[in-house]
Amino acid sequence: MAGHSTYVPASGFERWLDSRLPIMRLMHDTMTTFPTPRNLNIWYTFGGILTFCLAVQIVTGIVLAMHYVPSADMAFNSVEGRIMREVNYGWLIRYIHSNGASMFFLAVYIHMFRGLYYGSYKAPREVIWILGVLIYLLMMATAFFGYVLPWGQMSFWGATVITSLFSALDQVIPHLGSAITSWLWGGFAVGDATLNRFFSLHYLLPFVIAGVVGLHIWALHVPGNNNPLGIDVKGPQDTLPFHPYYTVKDAFYLSLFLILFAAFVFFAPNFFGNPDNAIQANPLVTPQDIVPEWYLLPFYAMLRSIPQKLIGVLVLVGALVTLVFVPWLDTSKVRSCRFRPLMKQCFWLLVLDCVMLGYVGAQSADAALSLGGMQLPLVWLARLGTAYYYGFFWLIMPIVGLIETPKALPESIAKAVLGAKAKA
Amino acid sequence: MATATKPEPTRRDFLYLATGAVGAVGAAFAAWPFIDQMNPTSAVLALASIEVDITSIQLGQQVVFKWRGHPLFVRRRTPKEIAEARAVPVSELIDPVARNANLPDSAPATDANREFKPEWLVLVGVCTHLGCTPTVSTPQSPQGDYGGWLCHCHGSQYDVAGRVRKGPAPQNLAVPPYSFTSDTKIKVG
Ligand code: HEM
Ligand code: FES
Image (cartoon, rainbow over all chains, first blue to last red; front, top):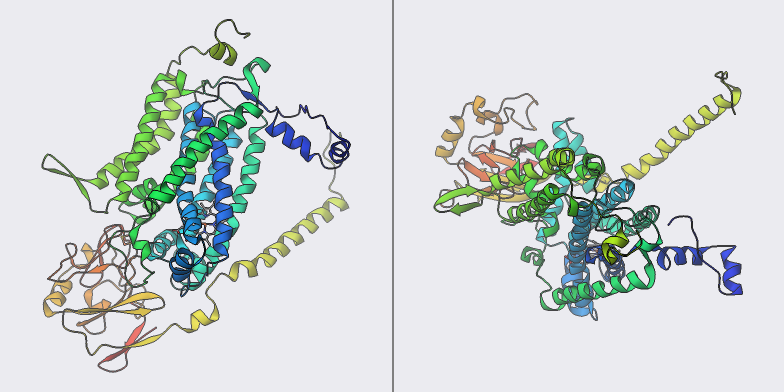
């Protein structure tokens, strides 16, 4: 792990370079010989998949930016007319970029739930987790700015609703919130100035994300990977070199992921899209139902579940900020849910809860579920879901860790994987 | 430096602190232009007022104009609607103040404080929750329970004076600064 370099320069040039800029040594130590637990499963391939997604968004985004015009008059036509119909392969590049955002979030959610399940946020990996939360927040900001760019109805009204979240601050300090929204908009409403600055930020943030990903991986390479058993690596018998074992495993699952990605791009390119966004922005008419992109729906449901503006906004922000504290909320000494019978159930309930919140977030504000003639307003489901989300992190995590009796942990990764005859 | 007793502050300590303080103040001043550039430009601020002709608006009808990038509602209320709005006691309202830019901040949200002429209601069509445009309620297509407006985004409801009656919106729809320049024209902003 950190500190033990096994790099041997192979040529005169490499020796010369190594004593001036040891970049080959860095690559070798982090991507070739890096000792990696031998029991990593499919859920550990999503880090690599995420890196790939970021690269795809940057490459396709730079190409789109060559044809896109960030102005309220021209933006819609530059996307729907020029990029989609006139630019050679413009449709393909746009569909890769727009579906790429969804695939990116699919991967990041799997990656985050993986971390929760195997306790990867626990000491000594707290900083890795917190950097991950930061990346997630930056991704949401980037995707939000990007979604505004095609300047459809949902772009415009999504931008209006999200930026207006800040106006809740008026209820804390009068006029503060309104001052912030007009500063964000560069006007009295979302308009040309807003679109321009969102384009600038949409171009910038992915590179900031790339920087934080660098820190995330640097922090990972200090203690090394956690693993599905959640126990520490005891020696070389527990690990394999990253290359070829995990380079190939990552590449294999990346290929499967790309099949899914391509299926959306070629067979259902508008599956994640909203038909209202094929209508040019109209500041005078709000669409019947404002729905954010699917990856923001659970938080949107939380916002709508509260009938008071400021509290609603605080509940939404709090749900995200909560994630930062996870390393200290979990009191268990055992990392992996494989050995935590009670926590395992609570975890799967959380997954279900998030899916349910997502479903509720996609329905209209006054929708109800009819159960055998009874009308159950969905807002109550959202309240229940919000309560469980907060309860999971702030009550279940600390309490279950104290009262649960974990199952016996295996002696070592090698013993668990290779059987009793292996060296412990 | 291993010293057991706390050393006296030296000239050097003073210089460090003073340099740091000057640097911090300088950095704050240097940051301001980069923050302030995001505020509305002088050209945007200059475009702030419009004049609209209300001759063709029918009784019971609402027409939407555009003011400062926002929808501007001009609604010509029926006698029944006016009577309904006047009958609501201020104590029943979520937001008890008029939110009328033409009156003092503390004016109560009585119906009379929401307009210059009972028949003409002029409002900024921006839901005070998160900025959607509420849908107007008419006898043919009622929206919500208060006869005014319903915001589809998160379900806020407003009455026939544009006062919020059901959250999450915290405030009444704003009455913009305006005046009647003649019987058929109003100037907004
Ligand atoms: C973290 C990486 C990124 C994410 C999650 C992301 C997300 C998005 C999303 C959701 C859209 C709206 C797609 C649509 O509805 O058509 C979009 C549009 C756009 N993005 Fe990105 N993006 C990323 C990186 C980039 C980069 C690096 C650039 C430029 C250098 C870029 C340039 C654009 C442009 C020009 C558009 C408007 C054209 C369009 O709507 O298809 N993006 N982005
Ligand atoms: S914006 Fe009108 S209720 Fe939320």
